[in-house]
Image 1 (tube, rainbow, N blue to C red):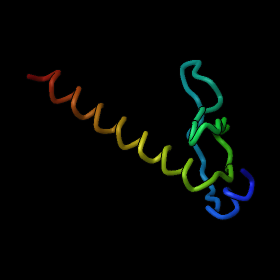
Image 2: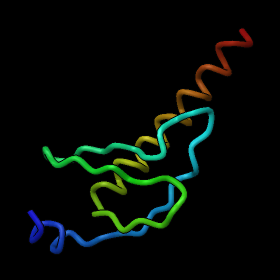
Image 3: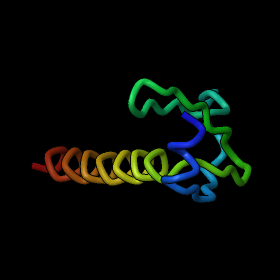
Image 4: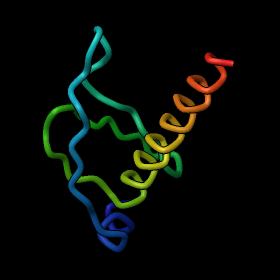
Length: 73
């Protein structure tokens, strides 16, 4: 598995610190491999993990937007 990560490359990410008692880490699973990414510090992760984190953020923004438009109708 380490060879696959080397081939894929890594990216530095920094997740916002936890608020309201949320965990200090985010769990991401890619191809049966589970990663726990600590919040509030720069962490080097495989590109596929960074992509999952980006897609999650996009989905959360879309959901927030959808909820706010429906709340005012």
